[in-house]
Image (cartoon, rainbow, N blue to C red; front, side, top):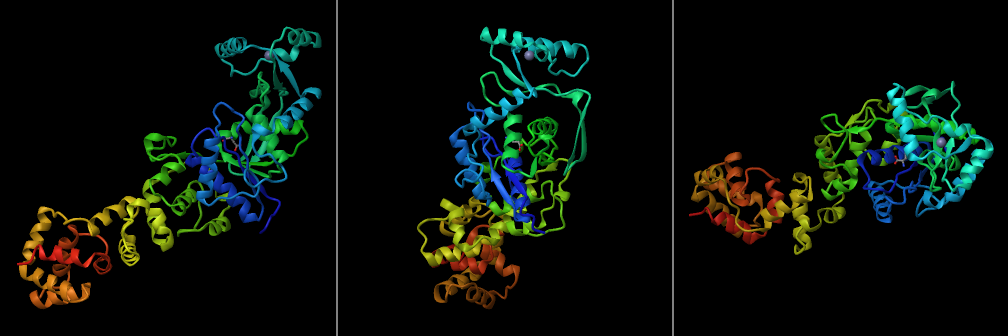
Amino acid sequence: MPEPDIVTRFAPSPTGALHLGNARTALFNYLLARRAGGRFILRIEDTDLERSTDAYLAALVDDLRWLGIDWQEGPEVGGPASPYRQSERSALYADFQERLLVTGAAYPCYCTPTELELSRKAMLAAGKPPRYAGTCLELTAAQRRDRAARGLAATLRFRVHQGAEVAFDDFVHGPQRFATDEIGDFIVRRADGSAAFFFCNAVDDALMGVTHVLRGSDHLTNTPRQILLLTALGLLVPAYGHVSLIVGEDGAPLSKRHGATSLADLRRQGYLAAAVRNHLFRLGHSGSEQGFMDLEAMAAAFDTRHLGRSPSRFDQVQLDVWQKGAVHAMPDADFGAWAGEALPATLDPVTRAAFVAAVRPNVVFPADVHAWAKIVFGGLPSLSEAGEAVVRDAGGRFFDAAAGAAAAGGGDLASISAAVRDATGRKGPALFKPLRLALTGLDHGPELAPLLRAMPRATVRERLLRYAH
Ligand code: GLU
Ligand code: ZN
């Protein structure tokens, strides 16, 4: 059912390569909006100016587009809530921080890092969970003026009233309750004047009209603070849902030692966007759809009720199955760009088309294309001892006939195999195995008929004559 009022967003920080977990979050938010005919926003959380770079941002935009995700509002597109980079929204944040200050919902805190650390240790020693002790909440107006006059830098802290509860219905994890006694007064503006993550993130969701915040479960415990903030500001609180993290096969959070962890890693290895999408779609989203799906089908099938609560396993084997399917389904026109330098640039169009048609069912990565190009267009193959034995057993007459047919006829499999059958009486594997071994050096690979259409005639003859009398 269309719900055009649904607004989702992906809010990455451009401080590194787009991680697979975040790519999945982006995909889910895109699908949630698309299914409803709503809007999907890309917002750049680049308030950490030291770690955020334009290069990471450009790579992020490029990665998302590669994955097939586009946004109705955000960088390069614009929109009613512009700008979409948090580094350009400081004035807005200052405005809302001021409101918190004047209403007493927040107060300046002059504690130094050393004082805070001491207090933290004291609480831990007393067996209490460490949180801000509320020291500066008690300051009188005069004491504040005095500290400000001494030039002490203040952070702005949001006041969390104790003895209450924040409850919300997480659309993945179900009902949640957090006691405010567990939440200390938290910083909304740092001493250098910059706005804290919790704050910008929540305020922007409200200002951008986001209705559904779907993000990683590492943010679940931030949510009560963000709800308190938005409520204090009289802003609309979105619905929150937290998806499970992606883990490696061993159950540990996905990290470098598992291999690829970013979208860029997978792109470099030659994975196709369609394959990556199909695997990501199934990570943490269960459904009955088995086959290969395009984005439209995914959007139609996406349902927040199917989002899992437990970690989802990244499965290289499964990804490779999708990759095979994606290579198979890829239009001929895209094959060249995907294979890149693995496809020899010197092939004439007819040979090239024949080669692609022959090897496509047998390749998963551009490296496989390269390997087959070497076999088909390179020098004489070297056979294993076992392969050599099979070819010798077939005998000189076998290859006399084969080479003769290759020279005389169209050089196609039908005429070669007919000639060999007439000369030797061999058929089936006894016929095709020695042929394949002589032609490719291997006992497996693409079907012989299309392979022969791709292999230069002179090469075919040379390889067959090698084992003739
Ligand atoms: N910038 C935050 C992150 O990348 C956004 C979290 C959120 O989606 O609310 O983790
Ligand atoms: Zn303080």
